[in-house]
Length: 397
Ligand SMILES: Cc1cc2nc3c(=O)[nH]c(=O)nc-3n(C[C@H](O)[C@H](O)[C@H](O)COP(=O)(O)OP(=O)(O)OC[C@H]3O[C@@H](n4cnc5c(N)ncnc54)[C@H](O)[C@@H]3O)c2cc1C
Image (cartoon, rainbow, N blue to C red; front, side):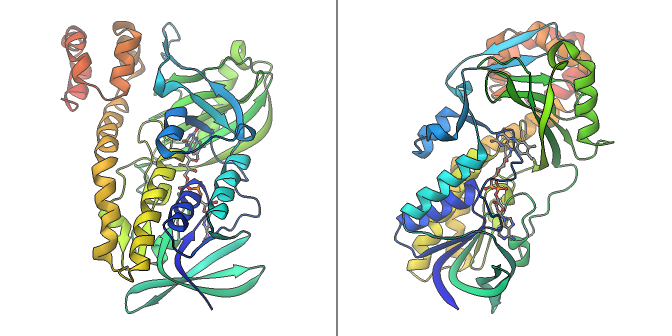
């Protein structure tokens, strides 16, 4: 049985950042992932904001970049209004997760973390109510690894945190289902396209994220309570828009679940265990983006776990420092976004069209950034004429 200070379950963006941060802090770290090839199969739109890379101190490897993005184009349900947003937040990349995730793991390895791929964790080791290791199938053989602290960074279907006694189950209402085709013969500019419509994508949106001049990820996310399923909505949308995708051919199908409810904070911490990233629902509730939020949370979890592992203080009370940092730095912003999501999901396409028609590009940007105060004046006349919209929007104020 091998002994580590910190074990990281899962080596996606969250796990790799956690492993890297913990190793940098001087801990002996092991990251374990069930995938043979990190990042594959891809289950993601692969969009990433440039500002995040700067905030997280990550140098983007050009090999991981499929396309550079210089703005967002938001399209109203009736397609009469296209809002172009170009600012610091909408600059970014569509990456190749197969390269991006592996590069993050390479950095973790360079910092000294051990990494085991193609190794599935099937249980945790618990003693006296404290998680103190994991059991994994390594090359088909059962192996046990002990550690002062375990970080569950095993994504949306996280089982490791649950085995360790944390309740990471997201309700169906607070889960989105996403499906996406990688398609060729799609004319692309350096913009991500987002199509709003509760009829075409209930509680979600349709996206076209360019991966090159004529290749793009075309996807849809819908709320978990909507039927029949995301693939039905995506196929329907593609069929309905031959002017945009009539020549497009599918070369890959990707999909997955996205928890879009409240991010876990205190509940993500137990005796000897921290859940982070999508495993802890740390995802943007509106657009479902979670790569960089997972990286941020992984870094926080790795630093707190390493510090306490070295001091042999990995009880819940000490590990709660991670939740405190998260509550200070990120949770309030995500809760504000959750509030907005709950308003947007109530709007009819007619309401959406009216909002798009009434507000200019800057106002829409402010609204989607949850800067409600900046748009309330302009919205007032529209709201007075639309009592239903007023009722929905009043929740924001
Ligand atoms: C259709 C779709 C489109 C999306 N588009 C975007 C987007 O454009 N931009 C964006 O920012 N986000 C997007 N997301 C969300 C994003 O993919 C996730 O938020 C992000 O991958 C979270 O990173 P993570 O490290 O927390 O989890 P993951 O990336 O899921 O990594 C978890 C890792 O844990 C491993 N693992 C799981 N269980 C075990 C186990 N028992 N033992 C060992 N290893 C295990 C997995 O193999 C995996 O490598 C999308 C999601 C979906 C489903």
